[in-house]
Image (cartoon, rainbow, N blue to C red; front, top):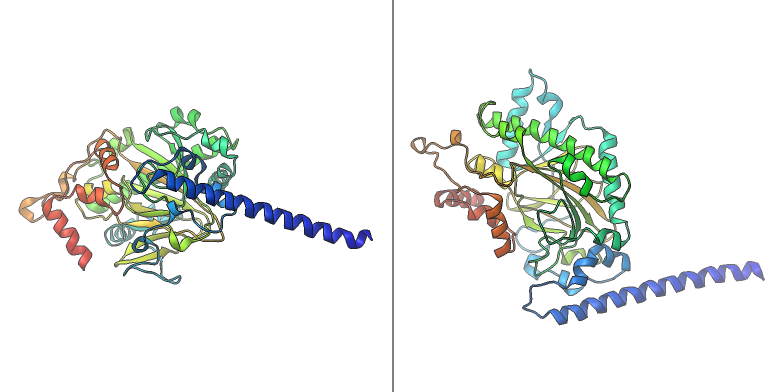
Length: 412
């Protein structure tokens, strides 16, 4: 009798667990629908409860369809438009080998590769960088475990202050997004490192040590690549911004969580955007999702294990007077696997005004100034007045002839 009854008990327990999960998912969906109705079609402010819960909470609840606030309009969905890609539309980014860059006999050839990548793609992958594999694996591990913490532990780092040393949130620009993105994030200010680490989360226990070690390694690589980029642009090593960066810089790290999504064809993890800064370094796990706009099409980045994906930011496009391109990129999500990435944003100090390098402007030689000066305050003012997507901030800093040149490059 006991041999027959035991399997029945297991089946009953499993059925009960499934019913509980389905009930929880239905409650979440009904709550989301009710809150959407309360907000109203024209209201932009997001409810406090949604900001607190984020998409990890929704995914863990077992929902089977997206709440309305995450559903993009049909023209903005990942499979819409002329730039539609298939699952096989991939791009192998140019590869910059730092071991060869550090070899004087091979440096010139690698500089050419770097220069061509920044002009033609705006993205490249860095290999043989020298960052220990344990540092990389440790960063991805603590990132994953942070998002596995109970919601109250994560939510204690919520802050409306974009300058806060640590900030937990959801979506892209959560105060302005009309449609929310399928992403939760943890932002960590990393400079000056020794002064900000104490404000970072205490849990997981290793996060501060691991993340600070990773941040230091990322900053070292940034300085090395920035020196190479200036050399490739023809700016002398003792000129340009390298000395300023050595004295002080801005460095922020964003740890991203893209949970499994019940209807990935209806939403995005991150909308099309370009990055504010000089260079961005992206560390990602084995789950694909990053896409770049190239040749008028969205292409999925085919990552090289152990590499960093690096992209040109708005500051570097402005500083290079348009020679290097800060291109649109976005993140797609999937229905089966969560994705973790760590983006490190590097640039000059926030108060520093950025404009085209004097060495790259020569009206008489047909190289007019293509961009207005900009600073972080200008960027924040822009975010407060617009939705921050589709690269419009960078376009807002273009002078007339620069905008015309950019439009011409897009057409070709």
